[in-house]
Image (cartoon, rainbow, N blue to C red):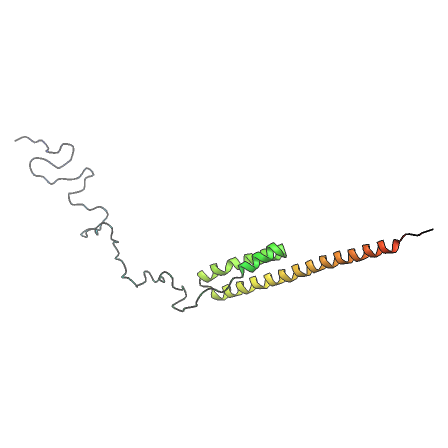
Length: 166
């Protein structure tokens, strides 16, 4: 009988029935990175097991639950973004921008579970929108008063100039 390998190029795989090895020298039946004496889980399954539906994994809250616990805090407060935009466009640009920035933080703070900070940011946004509306209203009132006074003075000046008939 010849001493030729049935699969040339693979060590230990010969015609005499010696145990075969893969090209990297591992014995047959090697399963990769599994620990000695343990088999790998089937494809698509986690080696650590999966939590059952409704159970939290690693102590994390489930999707849609508040991070601080199981308290239901309801919907986030009204952020006043619309009022901030209207004040920015119609009344007072700098104060409206402050209101928009404060209003944009409300939903983010609420999603992070910082409910008191979200309420505070909403109150700040409304406060800056009110201040901007008041400042804009006073500014527009001063402009109207200025134009009315200018019209009155010009009309009075033209009436007093009068024409003489000599």
